[in-house]
Length: 348
Image 1 (spheres, rainbow, N blue to C red):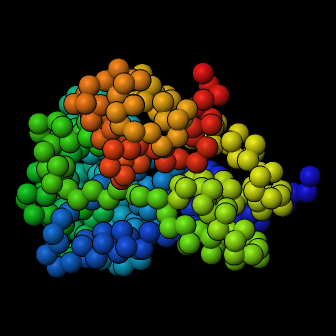
Image 2 (image 1 turned 180 degrees about the vertical axis):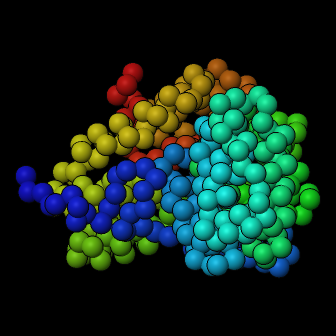
C-alpha cells in the first residue's frame, strides 16, 4: 500500500488546526470582520455554531488573523476552562501593542498572582483593573477582540459574560467571538443574567459547497471532474469529512470505494463517538431510526420512537440545529453526516 510523507499532505485530520487545503467561508468571515471594523458596529458579539468538525475553530482563527493584521486590533485568545477575567487582564498587559502605555500609567497587576490561586476574592479587583486598561486602550484608539473556542455553560463563562456585558454597556471598544455546539450555546444564553447572548448574531456553519470541494480535489489530485464530484458528494458537505477523505486519498492513492473502511475508522474514532456520547437516549433513538430507514416520514419516526407530534418537534429542532439531521423537506427527516448511519448501526 503506497503512502506519501504525511508532512506533505495538504489535508489535516487534527481538529482545530488550519489545513493547507480548506474551503473558506468567505461570506461569514467578511460579515464579522466588516461589522467589527465599522465605526458604529451593529454588534460587538458573534457566536459561531455548528456540528463538531464543521470548521468553527478554523473560521474563528481566520477572523482573528484577519483582524490582528491591523495595528488597530489587539486579539486575545482565552481558555474557557480558566479564570477568563484574570486571563484577559494578564494577556492584555503582556500585549506589545499596548504594554508600554500600561507601564507608563503605572497599573498594578500584583492581583493576578492572587487571582490565580483563589476564584472567590479577586473578581472585583480584576474588573476594576480591566476598566483602567480599557480606558487606556480606548484613548489609544485601539480595539480588543476576545476569542473563546468551544464554550460551555460553566462558572468561568458566566462570570466573564456578565462582566463583558457591563463593559460593553460602558462603551469600551471590546468585541467577543465565541464558538460552541448548539446545545452549549443555548444553555449559556438561557442564563437570566446573559440575555444579551440571545441578541448576538449566530453564524450556523452549514455544509460546504459540493462544487468547491470538487474543484479542490481536482486541483490536488489531478483527477477527472466526475471522480472529484463523487468524492465531494460522498462527504455530504461536512468540513471534517472533506479533510479526512482528502487526507486518505493523498496518503494511499486509492479509489473512493477502497478508502471507505479507512474513512469509517477515522470518522468513528475522531468525530462520531464524541458526537454520539453527547446525545440523550431519545436523540439516539431518533437517529437510529433514520440510520435504519434512510429518509423517513416524520409520522413513522414518531411512531417508532413512541413520541407525540409536539414532543418530536423538540428533538427534530434540536437535532436539526445541531447539524445532525436534515429537516428541509416537509414531512421528512434524514441524516446529514457521511457514513454516520452505517457507523451507529454497527454499534447496536
